[in-house]
Amino acid sequence: MAGRRPGAARSSPPTIKTLADKTGYSIATISKALRGHAVVAPETREAIFKAAQEIGYQANTRGMALRTGKTYQAAVLMPVTAAPDYEWDGVEYTQILSGISQALEGSDYRISVHVIRDAADGCEVARRIVEQGLADGLIFSGILAEDPRIDLLVGHDFPFVSLGRCRGNLDYAYVDIDNEWAAHAATARLIAGGHRRVALVNPPRRLSYALDRVDGFTRAFAEAGLSASTDLVVEGDLSTGFGHRAAIELLGRANPPTAFVCVNESTTLGVLSGLAQLGRSVGNDIDVIAYDDINVSAYFTPPVTTFYQPIEICGRLLGEFLLQRMAGTDPKALRQVFRPDLVIRQADDLGGSQG
Image 1: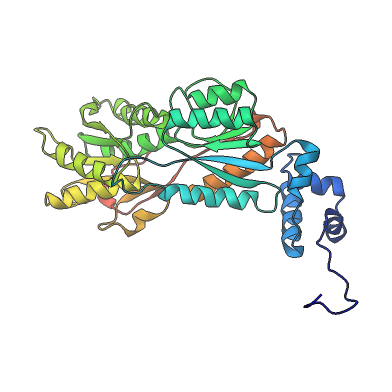
Image 2: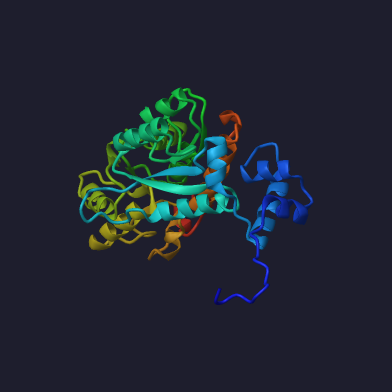
């Protein structure tokens, strides 16, 4: 055959035994590590994954699927809006997928992305994945206060990890941001700086974290002995346009806000645009505190104080938890809630420390 020297031996692909010889670990340990089993120590799993990459080891997932009945697919529900001219769509989710991919690298699992329009569509897709055996586990976000996807998956004992928590008392794995704490800390900071009319630019209250943010917002006022400016809580999609419209409308009221707490970087950008259109100066006429998960706020003009939690880290933990959940780990052992870091860029909004 052309391109091969006569008598040259055909190079065989590395096997799990090759990996065992290289690392010194048993085949059983390597097999469990590649499946993300909780009994394997993280440092051992990392060493095995690294060695697998070095020798180019890839498991024969088709043969493994026939033997085990598994698909070796990790499904991810990716929301994509059908609204026209929607800014920011999917920006954060690329970081989430990147983090999940990092976690699955070196394992037998591959990501299968399922595009959904909303939570109802996501529930139907999740049902199809479970009933048709399209994947061994599932990751999804956009958690509702009462989320039928979580009810469905818990009822079927199907491995999944959610980005966010519903308000039901159910046993499941999740990664989340402490949104109640973040909204409280931001609002308390502004109150300590002398503000009494604070606006909360928030998503619709059907979303669980929207309710968490309202809870934190109102708690900050209650702890200060003040009436909460709940008339300045506005709800809408997470677009830049919504933030812009909210700023224009709120500042046109008879008793307008003197400060804003924004739910994400997209709405913050819109609020800044609205303030600029009205000739308002951040740090002088009005204060703004943002929440950011992809470090966009570092480039805002003017810079604004931000609560920052890298979404890629959350994505990586989602993947790690899913591997462990698919390996049989109890979901109650797979829960993580992050408190974002405060990045101060406007000193004028600080009047005291926050808890």
